Image (cartoon, rainbow, N blue to C red; front, top):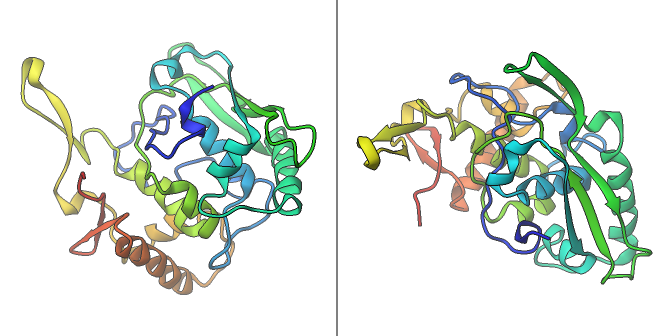
Length: 268
């Protein structure tokens, strides 16, 4: 059992082997964003539970265990998982139980598989990164364990830290949830948004304070940040809605807007 699924402390997402400095696309494979819940593009709509469970499972894997390329089981009592997935309120069994069982099925489907390629071996595949091994015996069996198995692909090393409030936004707004994940990756680009300072043993990486290396709030890229799977053709409307979501995140202190560039908040 790992604390990542049990408390609200910030954790880091894996890097998934991405090293392109001009990264602009979605942070996760597109199929994951609407997994098990259909398109979640309406304002105020929660992110699909399958996506939230997938992210929570990934966050539960310690950084030192990510490069070993073996399946890792993560188990927590059902009541703790519910507190993580439904922060600040207590859902009823007829709300969470069908969603949990549907999420478990969705995570076991081919749509949840993640393509990977190992440049060191020249081999690759399409992997079920998160699968659900155990669910409770029923909706009121709160002390039964939910066990997920996480099998990260090669290259899943250190990645960006995510907001402590990510579970809250997952329940409140799918657009804000996607944005916090996407921005975390865009803020974590070594050599661009992360720069080395010092020398020798004192050399370390810090967050760049140059606004120009971060995404702009008035560009088309914000559509990919908030609505990566939208099929709507009205790009102008999507930009307007994305700006609204991002400005609200800025008002909440989750994003720092500097000369219309979307920067990470200052360290506490």
